[in-house]
Image (cartoon, rainbow, N blue to C red; front, side, top):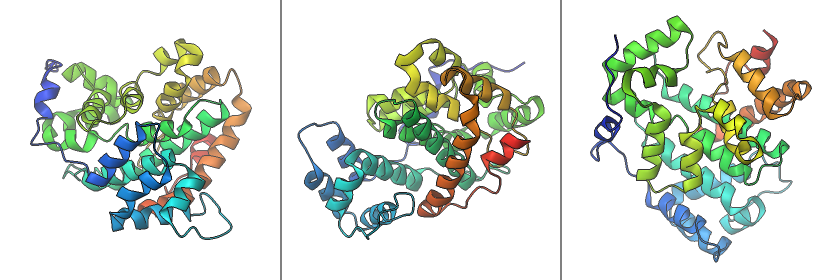
Length: 298
């Protein structure tokens, strides 16, 4: 029988010595994003002060993902054309990507985790836009960061997670349910704690914390559609999975969220596959070997 750890033990797992610090440029952008009285010139300053980030931002806006007909040469121009929210969320993910450790844990591969996260983020934003959810860029960031605590958990609790990973494969169950049984919390709670420690915007924290609660979000109706988009994206297959064990759950959730519009699912997956292929190289990630369309067709 699994030993249940008290919920407060999560605070002990993620003590201050364990948590990496975000770069100053990302923190500055996050602080600016909480203000209504600033524009592109203010957002440009922390980006231009970080040459590495500036190069990444210009690569990002000049990618085929946006498809501008001419090259964008300045950060201020990029902010004006793409929007400060999109640039800030990209910088945030770039920062998190750079500080999360790669644990030595069995077959775990950090790049595969980020591949999964990117595909889920693109789907959440695309779905949010089609449902006319406000601030679809936040759905992108929320889905992108939903699993960011997993590498830290694997590093800090290797024996427990060895058991959980083996059970997930053998029983075809969600990792979050197994974590709740063993610990009394799951990786969504852990990621939300990490996001709070980094003082990320409250909306991000909520999206991250609730990404394993699809049924509850769907039951809340229109007010929780953004969170439901992120939670639905979490049911996509991992790039390392041969089979999509949560396919039926995803399709049922999609049908509820879109009010029966299953005919659009194939087109959605084609769009997400194309955008993932365009976006992955920007983040120095390989394109997933298997497409979502391929999983859907099986």
